[in-house]
Length: 110
Image (cartoon, rainbow, N blue to C red; front, side, top):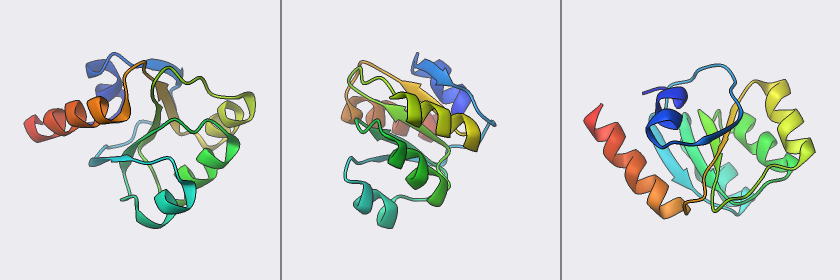
């Protein structure tokens, strides 16, 4: 399943749609150093963090996409960096747990 397929299935808000990437798993985390050391490659990353450092971690961990949860909006620097790195950035009013469960179900069915 691609990040675009996931965004459509979860009815996500599109802040930036970058290069289409395969989503192999999901990862929930808001402590950037923790995510940096533990998130699997090709994850859909669910977070409430909305600053430029999120983009740096997404690049480092080769994330499939970043999904801002609980209605969080990206700050201008994050959005600009996600565009420059060509990584999709989505949003949802739902919490990370709910989105992760839905994502797990979708990936299992794919």
